[in-house]
Length: 333
Ligand code: ATP
Ligand code: MG
Ligand code: FE
Image (cartoon, rainbow, N blue to C red; front, side, top):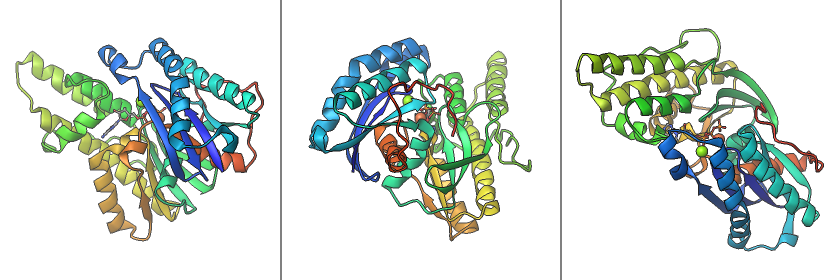
């Protein structure tokens, strides 16, 4: 089964061809990040325009690189939420047009399910499993008992982990998005500022990152007023250690309580080296029988291959849409 998948929920225009839900034949990702950097975040109207410019080219390239003809395709999968409404609509319209023209079923896919299903390119899913979803807009612990069966057992009450990275990056004078750079700085510094570990002791699986973000901002502002110089690599290391401690502690606890066989880490922040390393060593120590699946860094950020993987499962369940499919900006799992 060959599926062409389209992703345009935020600032990446991406089209992929995926075979049987677990093999990538092509995965074209056109990032717009250079257009958004100077604004310190994604500008929705600018994002939509870029998607319009890129989508057809990406579709043609994805088919060409996969080296298959349209007649070999079984379905068109597309992200319909969550994300920016204008951006989502470009992908949805392209998917509808292509599906209609070639008489193919249209398969709507949840972007967050896509992030989790990126794991399928690494290893087959073993249920029950826990997924730690950490991205620019989400921080969730998702319990899965089967394909397409999602239960959110905990989530952030304020900022997402990636959002905290980007906001702290702005205070440190880094360019957007700053997760990767903070990760690199953190490895050169030490946890000397020791920021709070929000909610770590609480008996639930929720998170909170806005307090941590404020602690960093306050420390930096107070130091500026007193003309004190702070150590940037230590700031990065201290912030990152606080994020990792909370994420790892709650994730391991969730894996124990739900007695899972597998742990999947997904989303843009899953690219974080510190998080990957700590989860690996802590899981080996605490739960040696739970297998850890983390997608390669290239599949942690937004891409259409992951949408093709999640779309394959939806297609097998015959979850297809009519031509009235609309964008759902605040869709949940
Ligand atoms: P969502 O998936 O919730 O809709 P999104 O698609 O914008 O949001 P992703 O593309 O999955 O988010 O992830 C982007 C986020 O990942 C950014 O906030 C970025 O700073 C963060 N990020 C990327 N690499 C790293 C890293 N190495 N360490 C920490 N954060 C990182
Ligand atoms: Mg992005
Ligand atoms: Fe995403």
